[in-house]
Length: 593
Image 1 (cartoon, rainbow, N blue to C red):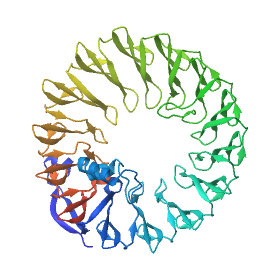
Image 2: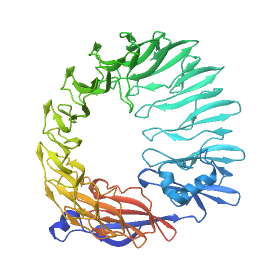
Image 3: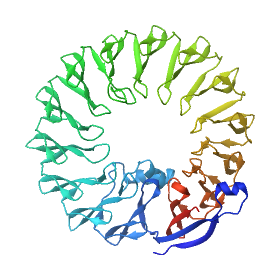
Image 4: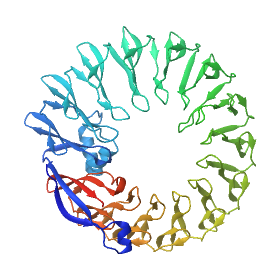
């Protein structure tokens, strides 16, 4: 379909600031089709690249993707939701259909690939089900499970049943037949390998890239090494548990858990029990026995260092005391140990510990000073520096590289290293006021402070602060204009510009380098978005019920709705999004000179 130029032009950001005539930024519209009146169950793929609906025409249903109607079917499969339809409809009335779908409170009818470029769904004709992928109809089956894409978006899979037998279909190619599926599928990180657990003759069978392993009574989740070249799983026969990696079976235990590969894929580790005693097993070699062995934290984590050549875990007794074991060497015993882990470069190990009422931070086996509270440990991005918050009596402080900073009579929090690791900042409260402590130097005192941010080159710092009834952005120590409300700062990739959302009265702005842009009824506070070359800035806004995208301070066309969940500026400032005006769907392209 031929695109229609709107005639709207934008000035480039850098040139507009220099007040010099420049080539215009053009906006082009391409009408994709009509927005159906009888649409339901909307699906938006990532970054708003595609939009799809299901429509009902008489006794037939069809998918409308980017305004184009697909093949008519007797049924397009309903969401896999256990909630009653009236509950879902009520939720949409409160939150809105887009928000319900975005947070997956209502599973979509169509499944999008991780890169947002592809769509798939299940449809029925003459009693048979088909997977429809990128508009291409697959083979008929009696049943089809959910259709999904691999992490790299290159491959599509689904489980299907024909008669009494089940198969896995990958890129329209059927695998072997099984009686049933037990679990899976799982994919390697790069998406090139797939595994699942099938059932045949009441035995569970590991299936990796379409090849069967040996059958067992039970098989746990199949895991891949980060490069996808190795795979392993935990299996049970009768009361014996064992690990199988690359076809090799390890020793038997009464229980096994937590199988993982090292980041370099060269090693494996898992926890195991023999009777009531626990051990850590690395490459099938047992460590010492303990009452309890723990490798993972509450929020995840790994036993391995980032390079995979070191191992850390916690060993505990049943009376609650514990110690950290690093590379097979036991640390001292404490009443409690927690938050253990490696630095980003893998050279250092840190954990928090408590004896009685006192807490310490332990770095590479060296105990720091005792405090009433010692927590929120941070490594710099390169792992070469570290810091944590501490409290002694009524005073709070920050410890940086083992050296105590100044004490404050209020809280300290939000420790932040610069990207290069050379600088550190945090907030501190004294006498009811707050200040930013940057490189050990206290900034001005304010009533409140929020969201401290270093620039990508680590040379600049910004945060927002409140004094009286006004909020303002503090950039490089200099406060800007006051607003009623304000949001976090966003630096351009070259670190030269700072943008943020702000509100005055009932009107909202995007503020660039301290200068407010045009006033709107609403400005999307989740963006601004800079282009990769830092020469352009884009954000979404609303005025009088109409939606538009603003690029470099200049407004694009007004629409009833802009589909994209966020604005993405591609390299060089090219911007694409979907929008609706008067029941027509458009693809809008902004091209910078």
